[in-house]
Length: 274
Image 1 (cartoon, rainbow, N blue to C red):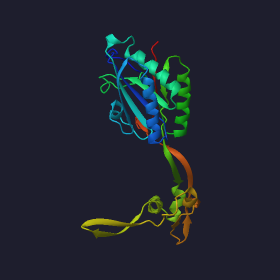
Image 2: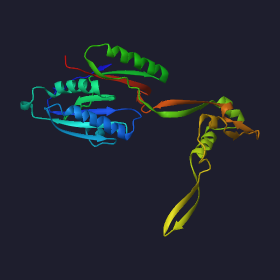
Image 3: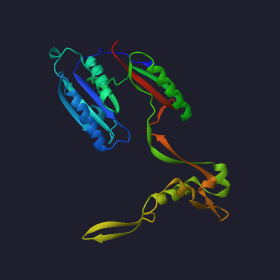
Image 4: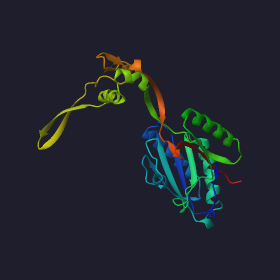
């Protein structure tokens, strides 16, 4: 567990970043969510300018990575300190509560400092290491629940970031080895079902055009279709994939951190002014 330290006292630089995301949302749905937040921001006379981006973005957040159709970033510049009653940190806390109350999505509101790139840390972070993903996820959820019970903690992140749905195929060499079926052979067959086959190149008006054949244009690679895929074995017989592998639909992790050669889940949170 680490608790952030301040080598440089917190400054009131008058810049705030708001990140709004909704996993799986369309681009237009994210635009609508950002517009809803912009409407709330109009209520605050302390805000001088607002710039917003959806998707890749070009604001503070894009420098730190991220983006995508389901994510938007708003960058705020406040009026000078002598023209407002609240500090940047106080206004950040107020905006966090106000937006979260009215906007449906994952909202993160942070004050931005010119020192951000050099000292990008979170106030509190708990590292959980191990190799069993299920156990790491269980412990991360326990840590999240414990942190939420502590007064003053906000923007709690359990570190679990699931990616898009995927089909996972698991097999063992003890089963496939004696049959002479390799992982590369299985991967090649599946890849062939997913990719079109280039058969030739045509020249039209001086331009080279590749010609592909899609033999599976009217089919989809479902779990049922995968289970029926066959591979030749050393005995000359066809081996059905469902007989030599476990096939399941699941969600993988979009980000996997490693610390001292072990998988590491990082739970963190910010702290509200006390």
